[in-house]
Image 1 (tube, rainbow, N blue to C red):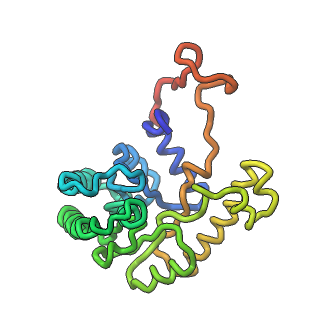
Image 2 (image 1 turned 180 degrees about the vertical axis):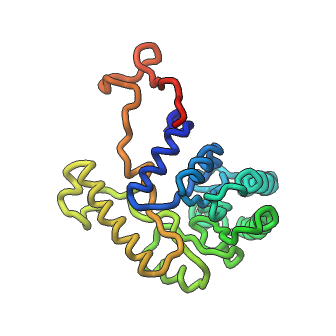
Image 3 (image 1 turned 90 degrees about the vertical axis):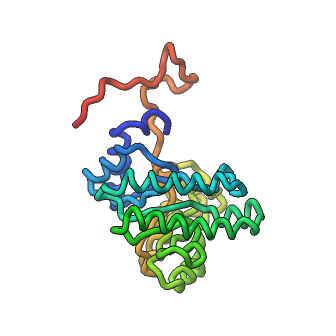
Length: 264
C-alpha cells in the first residue's frame, strides 16, 4: 500500500476492519512489519501470528546458497528478540511456502534436505529465545515434514483438511479462497451471472466462497482459521489525496499529502 502503510493510522484502520468482520487475528505476511503494528495490536486486542521475511513464493530466496541458510538464522533470532515481549503475539511463522516452491516451482527436490535442517534450526532458535509460546509453524508447509509442533496448510479442499487433521497436531489454514486468482467463470459457481457483471459481483461471489471455507474450517476443528487476503483483495482502495482520478498523479499538482499527524 506504499506510504499509507507506514503509519499507525493504517494499522489502526486495518485492525478495525478485521474487528468489523468479526475477526480477531492477523498474520503480517512474509515480511517484518514496523514495530508499531505490534504496538497497535497490543492496544486493540488483535492476536498476531508473527511471520519472518523468509518466503519463497516470489522466487527471491537463494535456496541453493549456504549464505542464505546462515543469514536466515540470524534474521529469525533478531526477529524473535525484537517482538517476544508483545502480548499480542500468539505464535511464530518461521517461513512461508518454501517447500511447495522447492518441489513444484523450482522442481529441485535435492534442496529439501537443507530445508528440513533449517526447519529444525529455526524451531530451536524460537524455542531458545521464546520458550513461552508453543505455536511454531511454517505457513503453507504442513508441519515441516513432522519437524514443527503445529500444522498450517494453504488452499486445498476437504481432502486436504482431513489430511491436516490426521497429522494429529494443532492445525490451521493460513491462506484460503480464490480471491487471488479466481476468474468470473470460477466465481460463477457461487453466484452465477452476477460474477460476470462487475467487480462487485465477483467480490460477492468470493464472499459466498469465503463463508463456506470458514464454515468448513470450523467444522473440521481448525485452531487457526482464515481466508486470504482481506486487506489486498477484500477492501476498496481509497484515492488518498487525489481529487481528479482521470489523470496520472503529479508531484507538483496532486501528490498524496497528509496533514500533521495527531496521535489519538
